[in-house]
Image 1 (cartoon, rainbow, N blue to C red):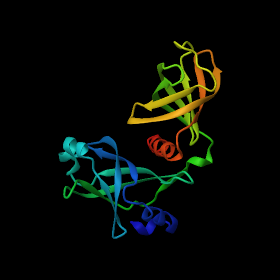
Image 2: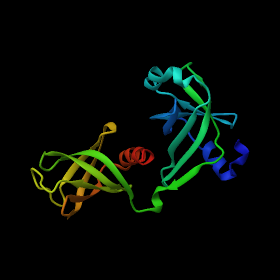
Image 3: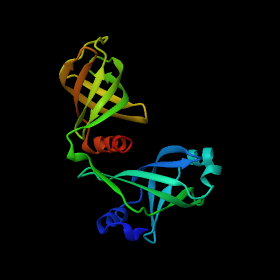
Image 4: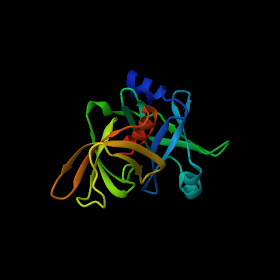
Length: 218
């Protein structure tokens, strides 16, 4: 299967480092199961080894052992250039020792998406917003995202109006225990909602880790 990959694409797969976070989708009994895990490594430059979370194995062990399964992987390979890699392949076999992991054949081809080719990516992500200035919280919708900030849609009427320069903490419904701090740069009102343009204020590594996780889940 590897011979159909271009040399550059083949090199990209070989560049995957152990521990790299990956978003995995496996089709079980015609139903897609999606979860986040990490790469373990390669075997003979033909197999990619992926760790299976204990929860996934406990809940779907019999379906996982039914043979070759369709697998889709998405991950950020190059944080500097913002390159997301995605590929579809088939599982080869499942091993449970020393921990559960799945062997996936190298794909026929990969898809690349440069996140830095566009200023912002359109999203519809449910988030919780807490004003660090006024100590109030609201539910919001993240409508676009970049490596430096985002735009949030909130109701027109808030219990406490917010202003440019106010500081906020954003938590994500699908990422437990993670938050981004941000500052309001601009506010635009429409007939239905308020749009807040935010600049992230955390350290670069904190921002990159969370934004990477959100981008590969889009």
